[in-house]
Length: 521
Image 1: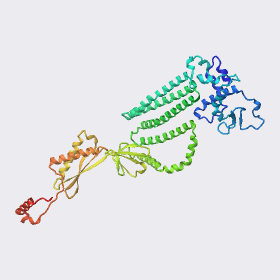
Image 2: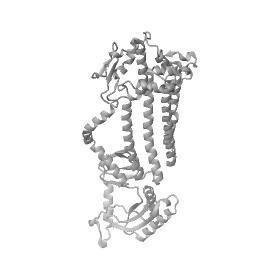
Image 3: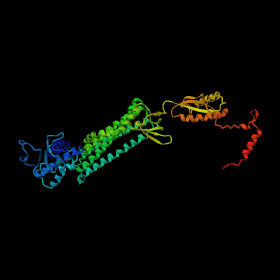
């Protein structure tokens, strides 16, 4: 610490020149009780506080320290102080003697207890005070002398110029979310798949730039603004949380960008099974990365995340047994997508549920019924799936006409209707095969059943079927063909005359009797 003071007081002193001796001093302290996120910056502050304490109470007599000739103890307390030096028994510095972790944790209380005492050792007077009020890594006394006097005043343990610099950093980091949110919204407003890919790439680049700015801001606050104490700890935690949030956001967007790039490179259709498989795989990978990021962040903040994860391994069997249904749903969904059984937007039937595939998630699908209801179906519960939206659709229409209708006339009418619709621009592009007659299909109690069929693109069959039925009705009306309808015929043998001619007088009497009867209520 005397070397630090000597370097800092040189006329051409630079803060970077003091980094090495400061780190050498900090290396004598066990900082294991401090979270890794603030461990490095706080170790320098602890070393400065230790120097301030020893400058006031004096260094202990070397003769009082344990001799190397004797068996060294695991711990030794500096006489008349709570400061201890102990043997590190675990971790990367096992076997070294360092100022103990409890000493580092409570050093500020020790310093507050003796801060008003006069200096005994004047080799580095006021070193800690200078560190609190100067910028840069270490002590840049020469640079700080050029600052105006009002900026060196202290408020809440920091100088005015440090608060001003911190406010500027806060404004910069807050303002960077404006382009991030704009880029995020623009992805959802894209009109085409190509526009969506481009805007998603812009969103990814915006997040990368934001992460870089956050890291630069953390370096600036730590190495230039040189905050100390509780303020430094609070700001370090806030910047670390922001850094991890942006990194997690980048991981999520990167998964979507990866799917876009691979699907574009391979020429995959937007709703094809290949794209869906890539999406599911990216969700799994992104989830693993996010889990690892959360564990790493918790560890950086001092939470024993690794031990918790290890403990989860013990309970993993129980969790796995309880998650069998979830695993079954996920695996079933992967195989359905590998088989290209359905795609987003297609009309399918699953059990009693029918509708358009509106959403495909990692464990279930959602069908939008034509009446508006949404069916959510886990993949593991799908035993059979019928897809009505692939390649082509054949629709057969049946009409019942009286027995005396000429089938050749109906066949000619069906052919004319098919030709007319094939020449109609509103329907011609949707036909694969025109509407044509299949002749007489069946006979029933009413009449004979004639059938026609057509082949069309999936999803268009309903519109074409409605138009065809209307045109068949009009064509039958023009040709004088009636649709057969059910009739009830009553035979009255007692009123039948000779020669199969009805007795006119009896029929008239029956009609008159029926008309004269009083209606029953």
